[in-house]
Amino acid sequence: MKLQQLRYISEVVKQDLNVSEAAQALHTSQPGVSKQIRLLEEELGVPIFLRTGKSLAQITEPGREILKRSNRILLEVDMIRRIGEEYTRHAEGTLTVATTHTQACYALPPVITAFLERYPNVKLHIRQGSPQNIADMVASEQADVGIATETVSSSESLIALPCYHWSHCVIVPKSHPLKNLKKPLSLAELASHPLITYDFAFAGRSLVNKAFAKTKLTPNVVLTALDSDVIKTYVRAGLGVGLLAQMAFDKNKDKDLHMIDAAHLFAPNTTWIGVRRGSYMRGFVYDFIELFAPHLNRKKVAAALNVE
Image (cartoon, rainbow, N blue to C red; front, top):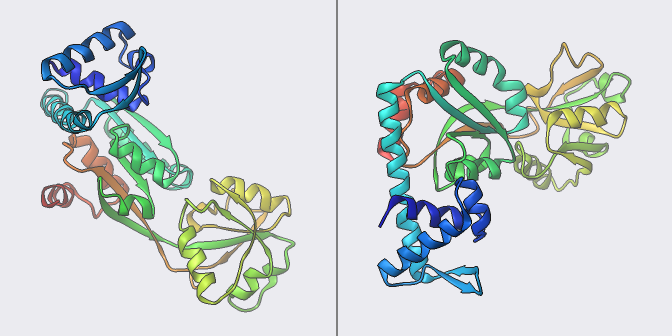
């Protein structure tokens, strides 16, 4: 049995049993991948995959158990490699952060600037997606850390640590009647206007829906978007009132819009940072987390990893 064979079956499953795509991802040949999988099956005495002609049709029951343990072994091998890198090239490497557009655009820029000044030889990659995409990327080792809201905190594959709380705000054009509102905005008032807000999978939509449901109001959501800038674009076009994360309103860049505090209408949201359970984190990953959330120093993060 070889580590290479375990990598091959793991990648084939990741590529939905497409051996050609697995070979491409592994920078090797399709016949080589197929041969090594068959050799492993012969050694173990059980089929890992069922076949239809020359194609793989599905993973077998013993194959699922083999895959599960193979992934554990490969993860440990990767952790050993990271330990070696930490002590030989502690300020070099790659850090991949999975996050939402709002975090990437409004919360992370000063953190990334400070991090790259401290670690100029670390290659930093930002991957954007929905909270579920983010949790999946970290769980499948496509990202080292994930930053998002509820989904990251509820993922069983991740250890999630709270970073900070944030509130919603309402944005309208300067000519909109809500700009001259003399009292705090109410849910009833908000429900009477066409609403533009985040897609359900993003940035606290569940808390928004719960607030309206509690008062038996139905918001008139005419448009949903995946990021704050799109919401602002359509508010500027006069298509409705915008509801977005307060951090996404930039008083310098959004001078043509008026912001109304909505913190009293909806429960506060929490931004979480998630790391994969059982992972070995390089020193610069701890530093990145602390730059983003100063209360999460290395001691606290390491304790959470050990406790879990």
